[in-house]
Image (cartoon, rainbow, N blue to C red; front, side, top):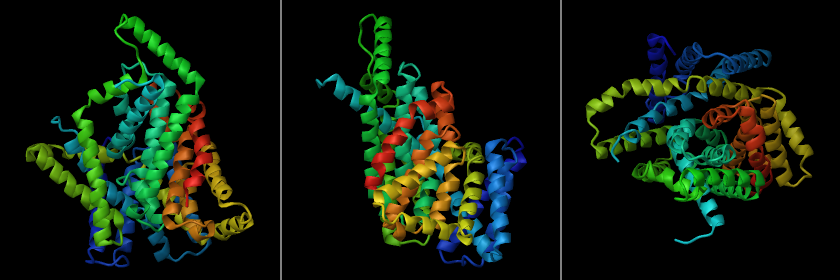
Length: 462
């Protein structure tokens, strides 16, 4: 967003939407009384965010908004209900308003004998674990940041892609601080505290799948062997290059900072869970946002960062929020379209489809839903559209799922489709980081992760 005035207006929408959500949660106003002002502010936000955006995101966001408006007109949806559907995603914007506060303490400058098989596994898990932790704090920005740590490691591109696939897929089912993840958990009718154990189990499955793919990929083994030979020649016999040594190097560079980051993230997760259990808020995202703010303030004070440095971070905060301008309008518009599907025949159609599959074991029904999302993503339909439609049109009870299980299904559809699609930001960012085309990342490197989790994931969704 090049024009400063527009950037300031765009950024100002975040605290205003957060203040509105906080006022509702505190009981100062009712949802009905501020529905129209929030809808107007939400619309202004989308326009301001889309002004500098071009290409796929602009086209799809515009199409989603137009399609949602056409549904409202065609099915004579009451204006108040259409506005309520439009405002569902406003809570995500409000939540993201506080996430960049973590950047201040994070960016502060203070801070035996085993077989080769075991070393390969522990090295891979260490790198994927670091990527997971960094993603919880930095979202997709963790990938280029991680790559900077590994630039001189000579790790094969195939290996790096697997690390990012396992780490970021785990993030997509576990992070308590991502607006999208919170939105899907809320759409499923549950809270992060109720969902957490299921997300943890899926994370373990993703990491195990990554290890299995590492051990069974003969092409990757040959690439690693070539990398070790090249490193051996350059170091004149000083040592060999393997993933565990590289993991140690990657850990040594950020060192204490990564350990500190992990400690704070775990503490924030625990604090959020306690706060949600004690307060039982109507909007869990608001409570989680307050925990992030409070913990960021405490962390900043513990580091002794002066107020001058915090005030100077205002521009960095604005730039961090500007980085969401291509993602949030898409999320809001796709979420709006998905919510409007509830007023169309698609809901009974999906219900009839599920009824026709009632004779199938639940495993195959869930597998079919995940596969359909992945195939649509492969065809260029972003997961947000499909997942939002599933969330709005399908009943967890009809699928034989609990609400937390339904949330896990939605997030599983997302990460399985994310890995296989060359049209999503994840593949583009990984491709840029490792020097490959997005299509190569998705269709050559990460498709095996999608196929494996298509088999494994339905076993864990209940």
